[in-house]
Figure 1 (cartoon, rainbow over the protein chains, first blue to last red):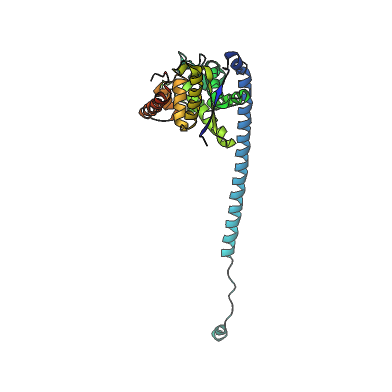
Figure 2 (cartoon, each protein chain N blue to C red):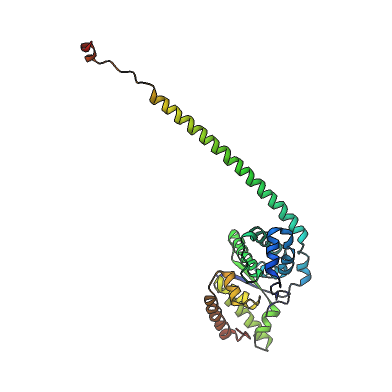
Length: 87
Length: 189
């Protein structure tokens, strides 16, 4: 097993063949499209992250306030047999 | 040894052109036009498929434009940075495919290097050379390619490979010694 696949090309690749692929107008158009697509997906991701963050903060606050309410409500004391003697 | 088209030096006012392209990507055109052929030949040597090479080259220029804001011009030709991106893109392509990296040589170019007149013997040496190159490490193969097919200087090769210049020189000489010894090639350092 060799590390690379080495091949010999009998014909050379000429400049004209390369020139067929060289088109800056097409390239820049594609780049602009790609760039706007990327910024749109970034915006969507940002909005999505913000929504998750707002939900997390809201539920975190909701849970925290609930647990503090639970702490505030006094516990009902269970009467013991000694209470009768005290009275 | 390099292809006529690939012997492209840096543009005279490259630093200014890069600064302009950073502010508006439409100013990237002179850089694109100047380096397109060089990058295409480099990628094509590793792709051997015209359509695939064209796709990869587009990808290289997309990446270059996307990362242009972070690029700092240090005097090393812009082409070296493009070669670095191209080399990474090719590596990424083969990694995703899970196949061996391909490298193609032009028969005429290589035959010119073999210092043997007899055609049959030349053909034999050519096959031996292919077998030798197939066993080189990825970086060694890249060094040989950049130095002798792309006519790059050691400084540029070091930049492309992210290595020290001294390490590139050492690797080049070691590989060349082997090549000269085994194939009697007409290669200058």
